Length: 68
Image 1 (cartoon, one colour):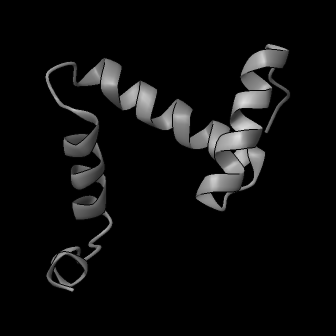
Image 2: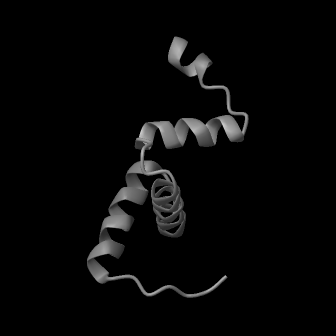
């Protein structure tokens, strides 16, 4: 674990987004970093495709939610 310097404006955006997504500011920043890293590694995939892949890798069943 370490300290990362984040621009004040970006930190404020992370704070706002974290309240919407029910995450801590750190968890929101981690999520953005992980998605960004995966997007750079897989430039042809959309955000939704990346999330779908991550759900699959974690064995999260999403078809029950879609059916509701």
